Amino acid sequence: MLSEERHEAIAAFVRRHGSATVGALSSDFAVSEATIRRDLEMLSTSGVVRRVRGGACDVRGSVRPEADLRAFADVATSASSAKRRIAERAVACIADGDVIALDIGTTVAAMCPLLQNRSLTVVTASLAVVTALAEAPNIDIVVLGGLLRPNYQSLVGTLTESALRQVRVDIAFLGTSGIRPDGTVLDSTPSEVPIKRGLLEVSTAAFLLADHEKFPGSGFLEVSTLGQFTALVTDRSPDALTLPEGEDLEVLLP
Image 1 (tube, rainbow, N blue to C red):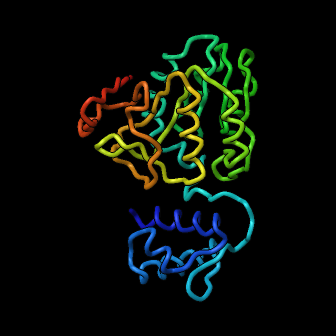
Image 2 (tube, rainbow, N blue to C red):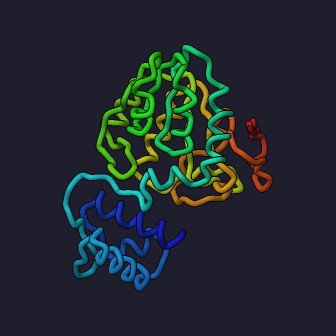
């Protein structure tokens, strides 16, 4: 696990539990206590956690979910050409009248400009998606309410997960932070993982959108396997991908 990813995970752990000891974090993340102490000092200096004897505690004591290390607007500009081509291929899989779910990622959000004149129902927890499609004349938007993650323009938490269980969609479009060679789909934001898993459960078909940089990309939390998706939409054929025996996956290229 990269140190940046570990810092984010430690911050999420402390926020979720209110506090954490050096020993517990060392065991959970399989690194030395000296490494954890350095991590906590860095997070404390940044104001993310409050350093206490033997560990750290939540600096705010609030229910606010973890912030991403990079804001949504920043990530959206990365590999924008690849995201656009992937979005075009994904949109081609949608029929007018479909009920679709759009995940919280920037690659999925790149579909929005291409949906403006379609007749659809869109289910989402992404405020970026809501903003992009709010004026579309023939799109009904179902917003999954929840706890706001301001820097990623998304809603997460138990309220979002509960709302998601009340709907059924024809197609769900999901993003990812990385895909291992064995087909494990990863994410690096703890509060998003239950929502991604929920989208898979409530959809008839599910498409994973990932540019070539996501092979292997990053991430330390397992969302699912590629075998749970109907198809992978990407900009280059993933040569290094080896799925378990008996699993097959359709790959859609621009």
